[in-house]
Length: 583
Image 1 (cartoon, helix red, strand yellow):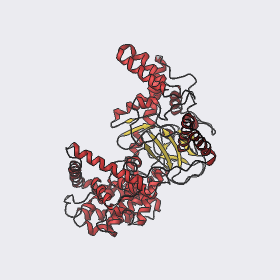
Image 2 (spheres, rainbow, N blue to C red):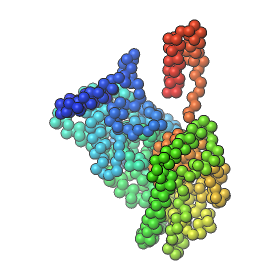
Image 3 (cartoon, rainbow, N blue to C red):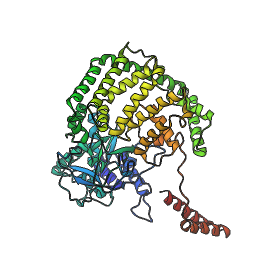
Image 4 (tube, helix red, strand yellow):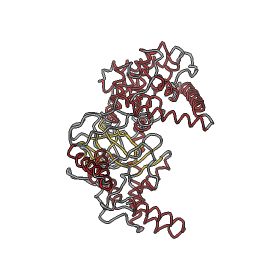
């Protein structure tokens, strides 16, 4: 794939500049050197060379490469108004066997990936699709599968073909004739508009299989992105035939906002939550409108407080950064060396001393307290009264627990404002119980609507934090595992729904600290925190005796007779066995 791409670049642009042609040819030679001569067609590194050389993947020192992997899922045809979700394409993804919450569904590398901060940046994904499909028969085949809206047989192989590197377009890469180019441009643009998914920190991409799933405002699956690799896990228990749906936009919002997001993407959402909220009793709908209207009437006061809070947080963070890093390169070097020292201690011992924790606490962001933001007199009491009246209406209407959670999840922006004001109140220490009850209700709503989501994790961490302060005033990082045990279990559950059931307690503790201090979705916490701040290095089981014995015996025999060449070959065999075992 990479060779074909760079040969195309040389033929198109090489004659424009001798220096450019020389650089492209050097790169092409470098790519060819990556291929193992004993086994043609096998590259020495799992990351696709073209993506590496063209900087299509953000470098990360600790981030490994992931192989595409298909679990118990398949792609089926979806009718335009089919109940269960919505999307502008005519595809859906279902599970082929029963799965439990947290089970891995599939892992897939990106077709296109990059920073998408504004609408016009969407063209980057479109350009990437077109460039790859025009130079690679494999990419062209994937693009055609992603853009096809025709009927599908029940026993189709679309999911498997999307991840099978041997599945190629018979005609080769996309034709460069004018008529074919027009059709191919339209196809790539259609895929970029309807199948692009967004992650934290302004990144977006197009992923096979995931790009063919439908949206739901009460999704059945989560996706997390590591580098440019998407891993999808079930967020609920699913039975064979149930649909795998994702949240393609922020679903913890009002129904009107969600409808607008969906229609902007070209579809009408028919998920159970949207259709269910449309059928709620009139008194509930009136109460919801009154609740939102109260916040709208006080919008200037509420926004003023939030702006002042954000400004003071930013000023405090700048001061902290200046204190830690300073303008002295020597101080910055000492700080970084200290951080790496903590990492090595974590990796070797799996634990830190109290002195180490004191040093670590100085490096972590501080909580949103002692900001000295004044609240307008009586505003907090009015907000709490409106919330109480809203929830009383939900109870009196006889709604099911699921319906109540839907309603509260749709008003989490208002609940979040109340939570901020409770934290800023002068008598915040006297309101811990009220704050804890509010966060419990918010956390339950997020758990019911989008279990394992980033918002669910953050609310769980905040709930645990408030409970810990109630139980242990003045608690610090070192007490993270010993207080608010039940709330800690709830946070760990949300993490494992998104990142797998095999997280260690150390990884959970590190993740809670990161989730609590991060201000935006940051899916790479597993590698940034657990490796840089110190999860233990992965331990692999010893090789089976049948595999390990031949190379070890050969090494001993070679050393015994002084056969240096034989010993080198035995060591190489042992290393290869270890690499295969690790893989």
